[in-house]
Amino acid sequence: MTRPPRGNDAGQAFPIYITVVAGLLFLAFVYLAVGQAAANRNSAQTAADAAALAAALDTRDKLADEWVENVLDPNKWQDIFNGNGVPFDGCGRAYELAAQNDATATCGFADGLFPGYTVEVETNTAVGDSIVPGTENMHSKASATAVIEPICTFDPPGEDAGDDVLPELDCDEDWKLDPDDLTDLPGPEDLFDVHLAD
Figure 1 (cartoon, rainbow, N blue to C red):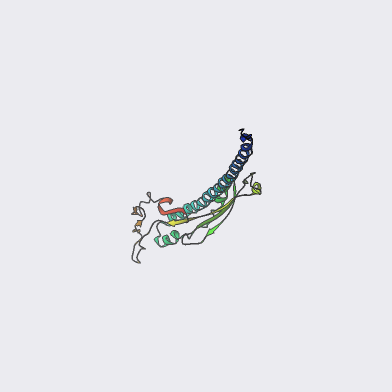
Figure 2: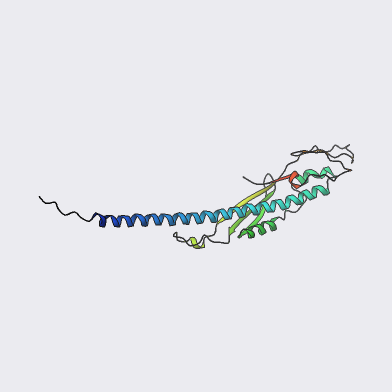
């Protein structure tokens, strides 16, 4: 009894092998495209965060300078801690930081519980060529808001308080201010906390 001739198994497996390899390569290119888009998006978010923080830090420093100028007039302190008394013109710093991160920004005042800035950026670099059509001209966008939160509290001076007494500032540490010796004053970082809004 003779066996029927067997087909060439190697010849039948080769097309399946090619199909599997082609599918894996396609998936690899898709993952690469997703990775490119994610990296571009992360770059945009980093630029937005940095720009918003830069704008808020610039204004925080001006508020701290304003407080130092009015340290002998405690009746003005609360307005300064509330963000009043200086122009909110920190957007110039936001534009600089966005440009350093290869992005273009729009910036505006964030009106909320605490004053600050909202910055929206668009990356100058596109996602680039990939297997996903249309990505070559796509630019990532992101936004961030940074706020200036006062750290310190104090008891307002009474009507009978003299000029020789200043309220004690209750910050992360207590500051007992001597109007006759103002060489050791809290710095901007002691008076205000700048952070990204949730």
